Image 1 (cartoon, rainbow, N blue to C red):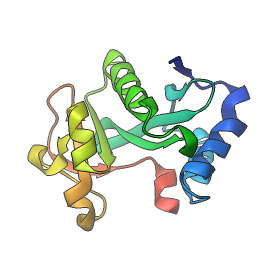
Image 2 (image 1 turned 135 degrees about the horizontal axis):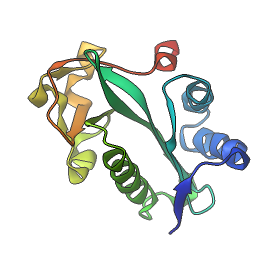
Image 3 (image 1 turned 135 degrees about the vertical axis):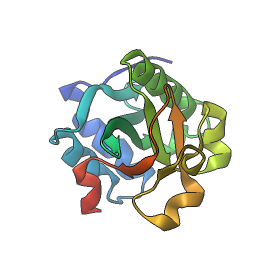
Length: 159
């Protein structure tokens, strides 16, 4: 499986696979908005095997300290459960750590993301933007962080 950085030629395919994976939900427009936002980090937008899958991390903050928000992550429905999502998460976490990031935060199923070293964010004193997210709001730390509220890149506020 080949995982690489997104290129401009991938944008339409990323939009298509995201729409398929999320049944035309708000995730594909969100990625377009993120791409135009100051929180976009090109090194952390990755595709797998052409564009059968895509993952992105964007700049977020724990209090005033920089951190990353992971997502959306999408895999073409005909290729789900084949290891593409797992490979994308491993790759983006490795890239984030290599870039010197301190933490990656996400909203997702703890049973799935615990295999990547994620733990409930509240264990680190990190609070979600929406209190009801707490049972699914997780963090993976690469360095110690000060407790505080997490804030996603601005385009997430449009959802």
